[in-house]
Amino acid sequence: MTNAVQNIAEILKSHQIEEPKLEARMMVASVLNLEANDLFFDCPELNAEQEKQLAELVEKRINHYPLCKLLGKKGFYKYDFIVSEDVLSPRPDTEILVEAAINYAKENKAKKILDLGTGSGCIILSVLGDVADLSGVALDASVKALNIAAQNADNLGLANRIKFVHGSWFDEDISSSLGTDFDLIVTNPPYIPSKDIENLDEEVKAHDPLLALDGGEDGLKDYRQIAKISYPMLKEGGKIFIEGGIGQEKQIADVFAKEGFCLSTILKDYGGINRCIILKK
Ligand SMILES: C[S@@+](CC[C@H](N)C(=O)[O-])C[C@H]1O[C@@H](n2cnc3c(N)ncnc32)[C@H](O)[C@@H]1O
Image 1 (cartoon, protein in one colour):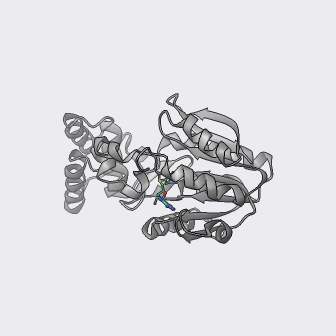
Image 2 (cartoon, rainbow, N blue to C red):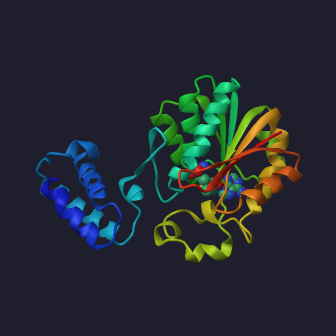
Image 3 (cartoon, helix red, strand yellow):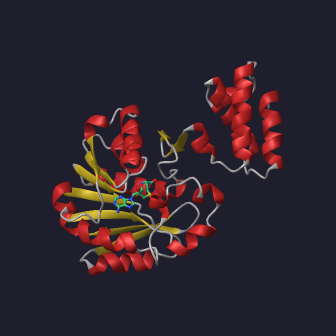
């Protein structure tokens, strides 16, 4: 480890940050405009301005500001996504849904995908990045989130294959305005019961938007509405890929079954949690 990296790693460790060496390398790399891997063996001298920037980053981090939002980017699936306080930080748990959607889209030669609650765009853009003939529509109720998603689409060279729509799944006629010819739908709605929000980690509670977290009294408010609007938007035989919170998979499957969907499978994330519910029209 280089000196600057080592010093910062020690500070982070003393504040119980879980991966101090990796985070220290990422912070130093960010002020030097380098990649973290560039600093394995050697670190260029930091000038006074860079030292100052780094000290500010460390100060915020030890006060539990999320690393990805400090650095403005988060690695998810195969890509780096721009993130800010306006979007949910993409979670590794969601990658299982992305992989399943990519496999399905490839095997079924899918042409159109819809993402309900796109946030940073991490799900739909990862799928589009891997499936060449696919185009997409992404809905979000937050204009600020859509701005970030649009920047991510530009950065990944996917802007010409995606249309962003500002609106809510509670809007009247939302199904007909989004379209009724989707081969697959992906969605990771807010799913934390309102009363549990105050018990979330500070990093989540204070820095992910409430609109991305709060799923109403039982955490299922948005699933009920998404189940209603999705059915008419999917082609016959099409599939919906849904992320759920811990222990919600059965209730989510029931909510969608009530609207006419048929359960295909439930996939575990890398932590062994039943995370992705897949249903067929
Ligand atoms: C849990 S976040 C998921 C973001 C992103 N898809 C991901 O997986 O990282 C849920 C997203 O749904 C959006 N959202 C919440 N309520 C909505 C509504 N009624 N209509 C449309 N989007 C909504 C939020 O703004 C947020 O971006």
